[in-house]
Image (cartoon, rainbow, N blue to C red):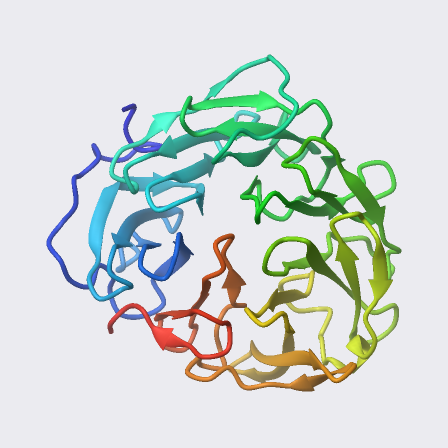
Length: 352
């Protein structure tokens, strides 16, 4: 192995069981292969004696009851979990295109992914899509990542997008969903493939708020359907669309009732789809200590209504549904990672 993806000490083989993270808002990212196999990163120096961009990785194989240290430090790396043992790290090298690394042993060791010029028609089994740009800030095109071979190859047919939300896209079933902006016009766009990247259906949306931005995207279980969300044309509120894997989109009624402050971060609305297929939007409502206080609105009965996610603190990052169907959320209020099997009932996965 080549070591950690972007520097740091040599990979470790794991530490003693127990909580791997300090108290407070030190958790930076979390991912899951399933309810039992979890990963998370925390600040490498909780006392902030080292840069905030330096993180350390830990993993749990028992649903968060115990955690062990995995590998060395990660610098400027975004992580994606492909399966129980396979993680992908994309790091900003500062000198152009990002570097891609892969771990096949749960983050304990890492190897650089080799880029190959030979074009491939679709993703290999167990593969993922990586949106690769020639230089930082430029539009990117889809490449097929082969974890077994440690290789990255361009797809024969791939959309070119700017402002892509997430550089690594794991398939949900055979479906791949990409959200970004159209390089020429700047309009929001969603591209979907129902055959692992062999062919794509593309759909552009109007710049509803007068300023183009990538839409918020929420993929439903099974991957055959997704939702795109954008700020409304005037004032607060949202517009929402439901799309199929064939690229057919239709408006979702009632989204304008969801309170959304367009001046808050993130600029694109966040949402997820529960296990039973319900769309839940994270709306920026009241403020607490000058920070947005999220609330959750579910699309039921043809409109959006407030909904309570049992066990999840109100002030948390937007919940995310992993490609395998498990749900994760980081809490602002207590620095705890929460998990859910259905997106509605939540429980802590890290101990304070």
